Image (cartoon, rainbow, N blue to C red):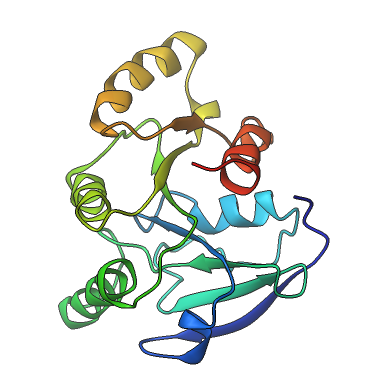
Length: 193
């Protein structure tokens, strides 16, 4: 697949026709400060597509982006864990993610769980992986910010991360130097995970 165009369609906070209209979906989820939106922008070669910012927790809806005029949707789920929002909003975002993964009646081609390579898989990520497994969703781990580690540090971290991924592929990547985004692109858009 080649991404020729990527446009924002809408953000939803619950049931909406766009969720179940039959167009294939690739969803992205992760903690609020792991660079999820930057990974999406990098894969689409479009720096302004998904909102990024210095403050974590920019995404507060499920954002749908049309790829190649409805060939596919990229779905940007809200961040979990660290978002600087009040307890009520945090709980609402958690329920929104859970709804999409478990109850919305959609089975994305794959869900990309974006983690910070240096931090590794946190308890929030483990909860998400457990939910994905429980719901029978295909998923891969995008180990972002891998450029912040030495080669040895990266190898050591991957030895810790891989068993916690519960059998899913783990792809180290970084959006600042484009390292690994090609492998992630191939895995997410061109292979049957």
